Length: 294
Image 1 (tube, rainbow, N blue to C red):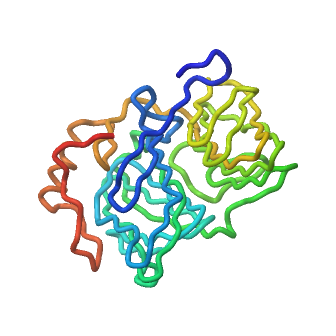
Image 2 (image 1 turned 90 degrees about the vertical axis):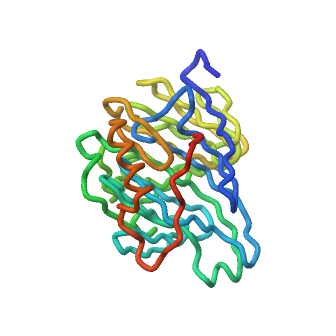
Image 3 (image 1 turned 30 degrees about the vertical axis):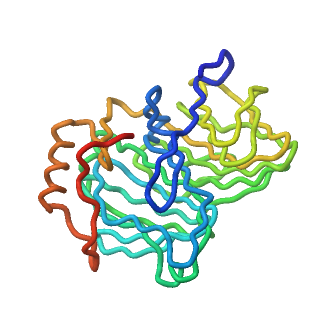
């Protein structure tokens, strides 16, 4: 839906059943593939797992992108083909650069499997600049106490990635990237940071973007170059995402992102033929799908 004001597009996420739970996927959308480098935007939960159940995403591959996991509640255990084993909890950041290829799984510890848990968070991907698509894979974990936080009147702000409100995140992105969490008290308002491309996702509550209403679970993509403020008459939890425009087209197929269809086809063959590195200690994996629906 288009708007004559500062909003270019309002995206209502599509629900995707991942087996153990359902996510709401705002990107890619048939009308808009990317906002800045963000090419995939999943809102997980809030979900509640009873004892004996939990996240169980088997080993799967990625190329040409970086994944960002950011939780509001709960815990996920990351394992990858580089040998990293890292639990992520609220306020922390897992940044995994796939580059020329990486394999990882996302599960829970035996203790959480036994006890059950509540899970709520975001999993996003950023496309890499073309010149970085084939770099060596890497993984970084950033603890919560190293991520800058600040208070403005009625607003609690976490600068997850990039620079905003006078604070700079330690996360090293491959291109100019902005990712900011804001919790607004009822009646509070805040000016949005500037970026070449900018989106505002409403995690909970509802907001007004210069008097244009945006409801819970909607991604508002702003027109390029506009300045805007966001207010929350009844309070809201939002994520601001965006950054510089990436040059060139990208193809998204399953867990692969690439500027080259030939490279993407090679990744398909490599996974089918077992040529990616394994996740140490794991033998279960997700087979190459026959068809993919984004």
